[in-house]
Every structure is written in C-alpha cells, then in structure tokens.
Image 1: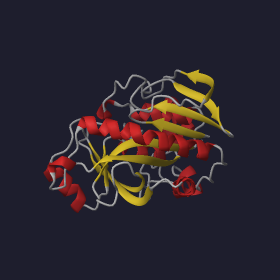
Image 2: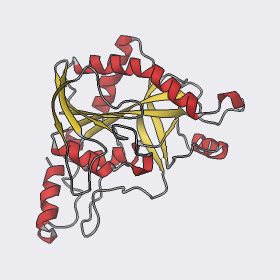
Image 3: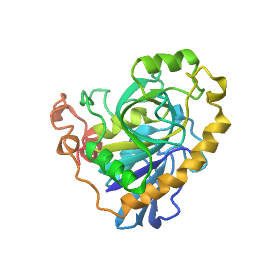
Length: 281
C-alpha cells in the first residue's frame, strides 16, 4: 500500500475519500497525527501529516520512528513524502520540484535514528536509500504534466529549526549537496529499516543563503509563500500518480532486514519479536 507523508502546508488531502482514521500507539510512542486510510483515483492509500494536524512539531520534535512504524503496521510498503527544501544549486529554481537520490546527514544527534539498539544489533545498507521505481514513476508523470522536476540530486538534512548560516550553506554545496531541508533524516533511513520503498518530492522554495545577492537569501515569509504556490502542482501530480497503478516494489528494499540482523532470534524478548515481525512484513 502507498502512504503519503505531508510536510509543511500539507495537513490533509482534499480529494481523498476517507475510509477510516487510525489513532495508534507504537512501541516508539505516538505518531505525529492520526493516520487516514482513504481512496483517491484507483488507489487505496494512507496519509499522515508529518508535523501534526496543526503543525505543532518542529523538525527535531517529529517522532519519526512512530510515524514509520505506524504506517508499516497499517500496511504501507511504499512512501512518498512531501517536503519544503532550499536549493543549493542555481539550476534548481524556487518553485521547482526535485527528488533526491542521495542523503547527507548533517543533524546533531538529537533525533532517534534507528529502531534498533538496546540489545538488538542491526546494520541496514543505505548506499542507495531511495526507491528508484518510485522516483522514476513520479518523474514520468511530472514530465507528462509539464512539471519541472529534478532527479539524481543530494539532500542535506540539517537540525534546524533555525535557518542556516552562509558558511553552512557553502559547506553543504562544497560537499556536493543540491538541496537542504530539516525533515527527511532519519525518515528515509527508518523507512529502509522497515523495508518500505521511499521517495520524497521536494519543493524548492528559495536559494538558502549561499548567493552573493542578499535579496536571494531565504526568509521564513518567502518560504511559506512560495511553498503554497507550488502545492497546487504537487496536488495535480499526486492525483495523476494515484490514478495510475503503483510501480513495482524493489525486492532488495522489501527484504532489507534479511541479512542485516546480527543478534540471534533466541536472544530477543517476546516484545522485540512482536514489533520486529511488523518491520519484516
């Protein structure tokens, strides 16, 4: 099943025919908001607002583990995220869409990064953290609709909630990053630990603050204004996607835990076995 994680400004989906709403608790706490199961086009899907229904969670406050675990519990095997991003590349103009294929983690360790630990040793490969099938599916529909979308770019995730300094912006550019945001890590990596295919549609709202022209530097009011203008195109793109059949799920993602667990099953508690069995579905 496909799940949508809505970022800033995406707290519901107007075209979604609601089937039921789930308020879950998980071994990792409560998700950001109730999860909606509904139907749009030919697809039954799940929807979760990343920051909560009233946008009350800052990026470092989002319970990413609970969000991903709850979606997996409800049957999600593919996730499309929606996120506001800053552009670190002149070619990616404000208003453009982009799908990252790589991630650079520049957070500060305040976020729970993994489902594992505390007696459970698991090392999941994230060399290619994004679903190529999902990315290509999104890109094909964007091209058909004439929506400008960049692919094969790198997303740097920063801690926030403050916006970055010019020194930080230049550092990330020199590290080979094209986008900067605050929410996709650890979300993308937790999705892999849950054996869920993942891709995010990033909406470029600004050029961060690396340009010499101060008028191009990011301001919060500009971020949200440009983001709202771009959401209409994202909604059109999502409607086209949900009117189509979902792409294939990569076997290597859907079996990511098969050889990653080092701790033997005999050493696990019954509680650990119960929630790991959900991730292994």
